[in-house]
Image (cartoon, rainbow, N blue to C red):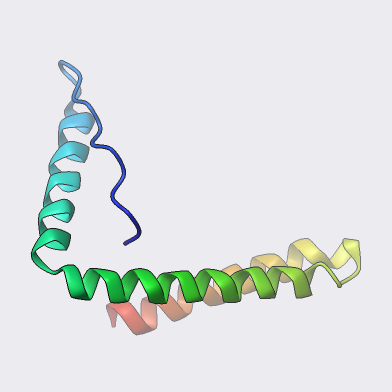
Length: 88
C-alpha cells in the first residue's frame, strides 16, 4: 500500500483497462478513507522489504549453484506464509 501511482488511462475498447481503472479507483478511495491504517501498512510493508533485502544478501553467500534453489524455496515460504496469515 505504498504511495499512490498515477491513475492508468482508459483506452477505447480495453475491457481489462477499464477493470484496472475501476480497481485502482476503489483502492484509492479505500486508502483515502483510511489514511492512518494505510500509513501503518505502508510502514510495515517497508519493514518487510528491508527484511527481504537482508535475506537476499544472505542468500548471496550460498554457493552460486545453490542460490536459485534456495531462492525458490524462500519465495515459496513467503507465499505460503502470506496465504496462511492474510487469507486463512
